[in-house]
Amino acid sequence: MRGRTLARGAAICATWTQLTGAISLDITSETSIKSAAATVAYGMMKYYTGNNTGDNPGNLPSPYYWWEAGACFGTMVEYWYYTNDTSYNPTVTAALLSQVGTNDDFMPENQTKTEGNDDQGFWGMAAMSAAEMNYPNPPSDEPQWLALAQAVFNEMVTRWDDSTCGGGLRWQIFTWNNGYTYKNSIANGCFFNIAARLARYTGNATYADWAEKTWTWMEDVGLMSSDYAVYDGTSDTTNCSTIDHLQFTYNQGIYLFGAAVMYNYTNASSTWNTRLSGVMNGTDIFFKDDIMYEQACEDVNTVGTCDTDQQSFKAYLSRWMAATAKLVPWTTSYITPKLQASAKAAAAQCDGGTDGTTCGEHWTANSTYDGIYGLGQEMSALSVIQAMLIDQAPELVTNTTGGTSVGNSDAGTGSTTSSSTGTVDTPVTGADKAGAGILTALVLCGVLGGTGFMIMGA
Image (cartoon, rainbow, N blue to C red; front, side, top):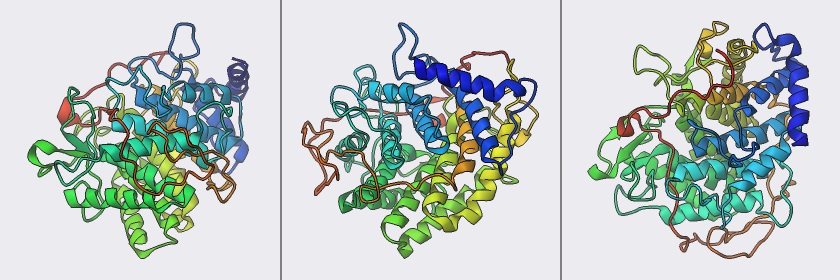
């Protein structure tokens, strides 16, 4: 609670002069960027009620699904990484650890009937970020960041399904959940992303083999086009012969950063150079005049308004573009102008609500506040604004370059054997199936979500 009090005070000080207008952001000033990030971080964390008496730690209130809580706390790990502000760390660490479950695999009992591959994946990626960014480790008697990411990977390996479509992960795991027959890009993207990052962090080729296998399957089944557009998903009821061609920022982004990691891991191989360039250029569809937008749903003249999940998607493309630029410097000439323009536009859109700094959804509207607000809008704005600090942020570590997170090669399989390197010699095959997913396929289940959780006047 003391950390939250300090954070509240810091944010109030940072925003005291901004109550009557948009957040002030000078992308050339570290002080200005940190002040803007503190303001938005405070606005985002106001949605978290897990510290309230009677509420569930680590969970968000309706209409926000469990996966988005994992994404939220992953964003806050990055907030610490960029700003060195530790005020939220006690809350973030407690939230992440509260959802690890009895098997230390982000399969908590409160989610096991509905959790999916991509749900678990977002929590796993938050833990992976904590390991790569040297976020403070949990106490030694608690699950460790690297081991948690390994547990997610190991369990996903057991879910690879060769019975249809030549492989791939299903969106859902349990047969009774809507979407069990759907094999989608985000579920497989989480697996690919985590596998690539574990390969780089540990140096173990088994992880890289699974990353390669997943990428190849995406291309073979048609979820990644010849020009590197990433489509939403496909159904095994037709043996994946038809494709849902919806494109979302987070699908493109999750493969972008994974490709950057594999490029780094393979010492700039020509194969991953081509793939990275292709998927990076494929992000063009999500920018207007270098300002990011969710083209599938933000343009109300084509598809309609974005649902609760989709309102957060720009956060992930922002995060993964910035991480790509950090890991592969030659990508900055493409990425930096887009992130800079988007950050300015996002800050300008944060001029609504009774506090004058509530963030709207449509960055392309700049300072014309659109009145559409919520946790996803705050997370998206925070992610792109704090990305302005990527140049001075520390390098992403590995276990040979300063990484301190302790691994467990058998995590998720019932073993308690631990090591600092997280060595894996062969794919794990014994973990129980569990999990399930984000609701991303509009054509599959309809637009889901609901009215934004209101904490301030629009």
